Image 1 (cartoon, helix red, strand yellow):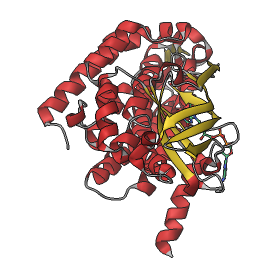
Image 2: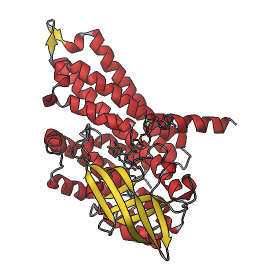
Image 3: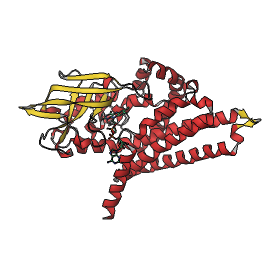
Image 4: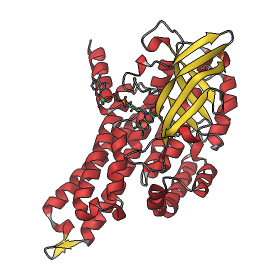
Length: 383
Ligand SMILES: Cc1cc2nc3c(=O)[nH]c(=O)nc-3n(C[C@H](O)[C@H](O)[C@H](O)COP(=O)(O)OP(=O)(O)OC[C@H]3O[C@@H](n4cnc5c(N)ncnc54)[C@H](O)[C@@H]3O)c2cc1C
């Protein structure tokens, strides 16, 4: 259900001010410290940002997809590490429960996720299975009314802070594909669950990933998401569909921020006696970035609207993710170019965004995987 327009406008207004006045001035510090200050996390909790997409009956804001992308456009205007902190609670770390969880699982976890009391993490990727997620090797062997988990999950966002992991493991030990996979809700602190050291990443400092290791980790059968074995992969795919639109919207916000910064730099900086912005070759870069960001914004808004109307947007959500993440890569590259040497120097922050945005083309399905999704759907529809 969509928020009342006045309430949404108020939320967007408050968020816009929070981003400009509190988050933007902290971008450099967060990257240097590789940590988000606790008072910022508290303010994000206060604003309800951990529960954007969790239904109101479970304590969230219950935003429609159209509302959520408007919020993501705003959050995208600053370092993506801030968005990443609340990203899993709104996306891959909660939506499995929202979409397929039992009522008991919803009651137990969603209010705490919505309030930001616990952070959710989504543990699908493994050392040997990334794009080919259906081939995952983590096992969940039944032992009476329990399952025993063994395996390693890799690059799991927010794992170091997480209180709850949605873990994908093979319950049909004879199977080799996605059909034998189930999803489990495993709480941090469960004996047999441990974390690897925090990964050192190219960008998005302040957001953390690490390995999650299961060694004879015993969980009750009631921990199976939705209570049914063999549904895990279907749940994962449903969750990723929504996440693709969210990521697309974040990339639009980031591109718009970079275009704004590039334009003001080009208007201020003079060479050959005139502002850079007067040179047509610079204008071409600005115009290309503006047109591409606008195209991505329109795609995301339209696909979100159709998803809210109950249409299947699997192909178009993949188009949004692919186009927006590639688009922001080109925009960030042009931003570095427009800034010249300053674009390469850390103090200006542009090179940081250039590194930060690189991730969007890799996680939640690489560009190549989006291409496969789009083309396979096209072929299926035509057949
Ligand atoms: C910072 C970060 C955070 C992450 N957070 C999470 C998380 O929270 N939870 C989680 O489960 N995972 C997470 N991941 C993992 C991420 O989703 C995977 O890295 C991604 O899906 C790609 O898998 P891979 O790294 O194994 O690459 P691979 O699958 O090995 O792919 C390598 C290259 O081959 C290409 N390729 C693979 N298959 C095909 C094909 N059939 N056709 C054409 N090209 C192909 C890929 O597009 C890519 O270019 C995160 C990763 C990073 C870096």
